[in-house]
Amino acid sequence: MKSWVIDSERNKSIALTAVAAIATDGKLAVKIIGSGSKSTRQRGLQWRLYTEIAALGIGGEHGDTKDGVHLTCKYKFAKPILTRDSGYFRYMWSGLTAVSASLPPEKHKEYFHYLVDEHISTEKFTTSQMAEYLTDIYQYYAGKGIYLEHPEDRGLLELER
Image: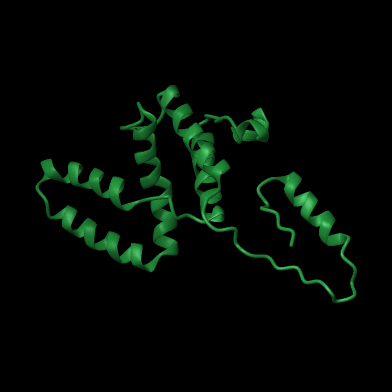
């Protein structure tokens, strides 16, 4: 059985060519399924972006390190995806933020950082959710006139290293 993860125009073209070559005699079926959790390429790109944003000093309040950028990006870009796609996350986040709001102001910020760090994660994102997350990061910074390096700028093969 052949399968392709459609994560580049090249792979898409290869898959389309293979499908076009299939005889129309009904002996084969083509099945399109989600490819599961985020790919190694996406994970590599995620951390390259965090490193680039931190190096440029544009990561926001915690943007001086790639881990700080990760924290900021999880809140800005992963939380909306999780809120939209997971009823459990919506329910859990609502309860946790209600608790956070009841804390004294000096504890609120510390608790909120803990919530983001511990309860917002991209680890179980599907490849399509991760693609959306990465695209949102690119678009956010492009909207500010900052164009982050794209994997096609360096060649997709370098990203696999």
